[in-house]
Image 1 (cartoon, rainbow, N blue to C red):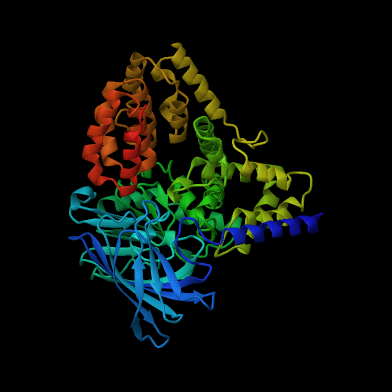
Image 2: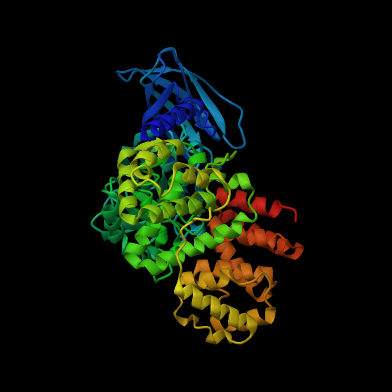
Length: 613
């Protein structure tokens, strides 16, 4: 039985790889040639909002007859291209830049007389590059210096570097970056906290990474050590609070190493970006990018750091081969994140966080087409792959495997999985081929391969999904019910000692309609309008929008203007857009907020405001 299953899985894997040799979100001809190393030489011009320079690509040729290299670009200006011989001598290469596709950008086709070991592309990136945000001094915390940072995931690296922009290709890189003096440059590489602010920075990343983990940031950055292999970079006015909030970073690294093997990236530093950063965090190796919205003073939102750290095993180390398999990155990472939170902050907080996520997913299922509920959906735009299904449903499957096989057996499997596929990009089929003999067949009768595939291929959540409980949440649900029924005053619901997750649970569970006078008295008791905690404020403002609670609007507008994290602000725009008055208010807010938003956030907000209800 084991042998026949292994043969069947191997045949399925071979058939899949043959059919999916080309990433649908990339133009690159990776079946013929792949990039093995990248060397960047870039100058940064804040006045023009441009990166200018050259990219040297070291090539591995797989097809002896191939004479063409196809790269991904978006809105790059190509100045010239040289083919480099083994001795470094350069010869001009012919090239064509294809018509721009709205999602994938433009294919750069380089015709070569012979297979060159290296190609050098001279170019500059446009000020509108989708993977870069250029910020004026006024848009930063310090208000003195400009700031620039990248966001390459999912397919935005091609907007600032010409390369094979697909997670199926991994490469090492070096970089020289010249910036205005007094500013610090950092990358997803070996950053030197003691580097002189001389405007000339050099970086090395000697472990192979996919293109979406290529990252850069430049600004007025201070540094504080948080451990023997970790530090926080942030603007001077933010760095002390950030270092205090992230003081448990080394403890998190050591905890994860005990569970899943050594941390293989050297250092784990964190860069706290301005509030316009469109994500909570980005797992760039050696330098996680993080939103300042998680700095609340009580470490209640540092699960974000646990999540980005977990990517050092699931995602950065073992990577989805294309974006339709994104659950291999995010589902595994969300599971590992929860295990880190449990080990460092206790099972109660970990369970509360998982219940919140699973409740949100159940609500989302009602409005999500069934094909999009699969763990391996077909997505036209790679940016649409990062749904709650990839994150939460994926983690829920792993949590169910843990429940079925026991934590000891599942931990051993997962550690072996990370070791087996280290520094590789894989598909769901490859994951299953490893899962069958290394977990399912070792403990027969607990969960079959068909059961696992049902999780992956079918919509919704299977009935055998493992789910924690929380006595604290049960008590909060009772308090919420009593307040809504009028048998308990706002001041008497016991919220004084609630943590962030418990406030989130209370607000998430409110009905669609709550009488405005009840909201007024509740707000007077707990001062949620203008709350400093961004997670609590987001939920309160959604309640306010649903019930036309006008006293929240001024603080809501300030919140939506100050913060550019899509998860926090886009739902507010979507909710406001459902009524004419709300849409008018939202458009006024967006007119002021737009210059400070990242291009990705702008696209999401404009989609929300364009919807007809």
